[in-house]
Length: 416
Image 1 (cartoon, rainbow, N blue to C red):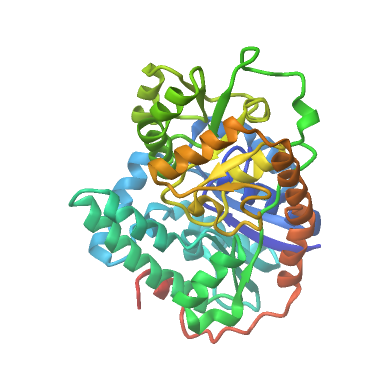
Image 2: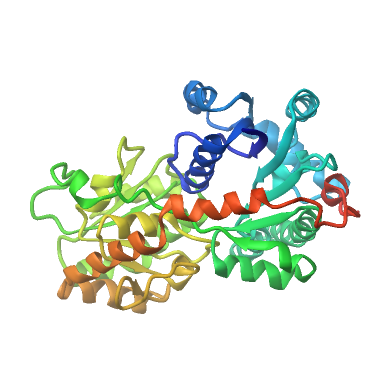
């Protein structure tokens, strides 16, 4: 086996949120084909319990703590250096030292960075294949955030969108391949970075269809008998998720309960933000916080909703509900990049109160079991991890050296 350096901005274990699901499955694939040297950060102290699992499948591991307050202070230096704030947020001297030492001691043939911020650690030269999994076009996400915030944060987010796009383009120039979570996301980046278009690839997410199978959780219903429940699942400290559930509770749920008395809205996900936790005081709303297993909460709901107004890439919450055979009502933003056919495998509804209310209410008036069955069939057809990750293997086996070498990662970070 060749040696491979894998740099991830958040510990890829356990696979309990969007980015960690992807990085986790990539790591498991890489460990089957390479001697993996993993460099990563731990932003939740509880995740340190999973280090033995990582050390079991990796040759070496460097996991650095990432306290939020310290990261915020480092990020502020970006205002002085001209960098996007995301880059110094993830800057760590000890991790940089570990990377240098690993490259001296180990015959590393390939280096993969998960998220653009980790590209600052990628080595230059040495004949190594360099791949960056951007996942999403993060710069556009910050640009989308800007109109939702008041000054001065609106100005900060606009700045981050501009500076981060410059950085993303330079990182792509310095890499042999740039990966994105869907063909739509890859096309979006090609339009923003035409100089690297020939080295931009889509690497679709997958779903563990055996784990997320209706029969796997058939007997574990967390809801009361006869309950009609609408479920939203996701990390509830993530702003787009927070915005989505607050909007749904404010703009859709009251009208829905007026037409369908007794309908419940269940918000399932860890670390609910204060505005999410406050929703639990409203009639018909449950906020679970962390649950050991999200599957029963989705599988036994009447339907799942994804009323996202801000989104990038592929939404795992939608794929997991589809895999569990649940009907999904989702905004166009939440469906972007998915191959699901609206009206056949999912229900699409604009994130506008009347449209979303009618879509959800319409399903409650006339449930269609065939929708959930078609949704699972789509997942089985298009979202198999083993099949999708085989494309990553093909990219890593290609010969390096297609990039010009005129832009270093350090230069990219500082916009030079």
